[in-house]
Length: 190
Image 1 (cartoon, rainbow, N blue to C red):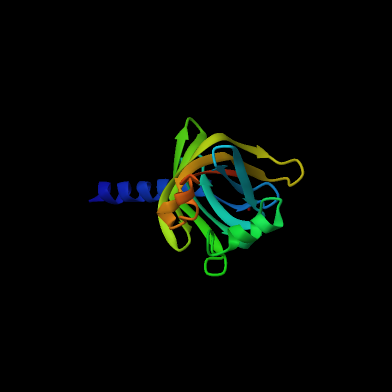
Image 2: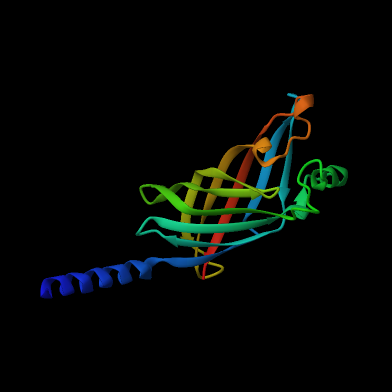
């Protein structure tokens, strides 16, 4: 009985120690962007990004775990062309009036050594939620000389089938279903 109590106390102490390494990070909106690319009749590539986003990250490098939640303001879409922005926000595509935000949530980080290699979670767009895995093309943590705090982040990408979210506009005309999503993210330790 005494051994069991001692084992329980040791396990509780170790669990408490593991939690000490977990940290909260706030997404830095000046170094975080979500953008997309989609082919245009096999000729060129339409690109756009979302200028307003917010979110949080919990990250434990030692335990190799993490959580992330990012909310993107659909009305902040920016392609560089006002008329195109307006059409993208219309009911034909993002339907920003009914669905003003998109959200990515994850609690599954995969690692290659001490670097995040991918983040698997769900993307909610147009009121529909689908699984999405963002693959890292670069990840790093550094001590910011300006902020005097640790910053972690990287570049991530995935390709989604937009029709899985009900975004079918132009498919009958030959617009592709697949959309490449690129996410540049940096988060500051709180």
